[in-house]
Figure 1 (cartoon, rainbow, N blue to C red):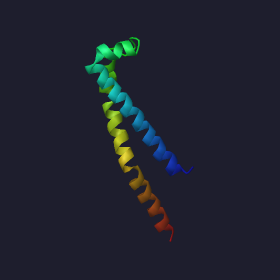
Figure 2: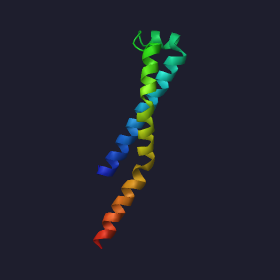
Figure 3: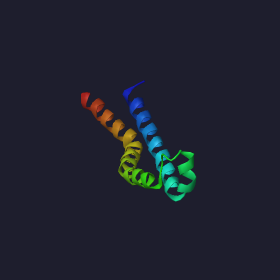
Figure 4: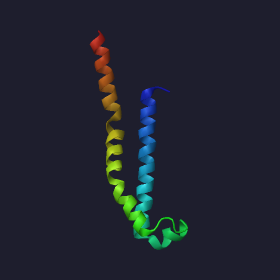
Length: 85
């Protein structure tokens, strides 16, 4: 596995995890009477709201990395190759 593949997979999986947690905590805020018993009281409405709010910046950063990772890496790689010629 090359570094590019590893970076793409890491960004993809991190974004997937953040999106799933973001959705679960959003559901935990709106439907806390269902989520609290399902999580055995671990995910309360207050905790879900704090996690949900704190995930905004990581979500935006990972989304930008996920979208721009390949074009940026390709551009820098092409610059290095063309500079050697």
